[in-house]
Length: 300
Image (cartoon, rainbow, N blue to C red; front, side, top):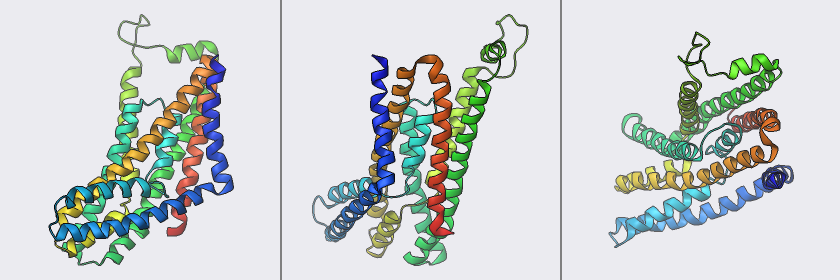
């Protein structure tokens, strides 16, 4: 019965590979871009209604911004591949991965807010100049950070796979919990749980910073427009709503990645999964690294 569970993760992975090979991902991007234009037109009307003081205008604006953030996240960037690759390859709980997705999206919104406020009030930049900074400076930095995370995932998977080649006695000793009462008379540094917690925090910080460093161009546009219309507070609120829409999509990606990981582990069992999971981590890291190169390409 357990091998049947592997069918669903394999189907999801095969669907992703097929989409990349046939260019379906670009079709989805174009479809999302069309919806973005529709939502941008609706946002323009919502901003005019808000400035005119129409009742319910602020709620409508927040809803439109949430929808724009969700659809916009279907396009390139926003950490989908990074979150998905990390979720597939690492033993991270869904709740933690969802929080990483949420904080990453909110971090992008905060980056956009800081960039626009600094550009408007300190530098006197135009929207084009702020967008240029986001694309020519922050995008390459984000690509480098994401690429480093991908390389680290691939390296970590390779190291874990190499350790499995150790003799059984050495592998058992390495897996042994050297706590104070273990009986072997010594403690080799922190416990497994301490290392897992420290690594989890370090991973989360790296993921959030790598994604959040690049602000959303739609958020920059909204903030500049609302500043010119003297309703900047509404722009800040709308930007945060956009980030929640983006987070909603990345959380769905996180849930899918965790499902793939658990389905693979349950299907393969302990011994085979011990070898399969490091291999998956290596391929996931390589995929994230490839996405980082693709991100950096237009900016280089």
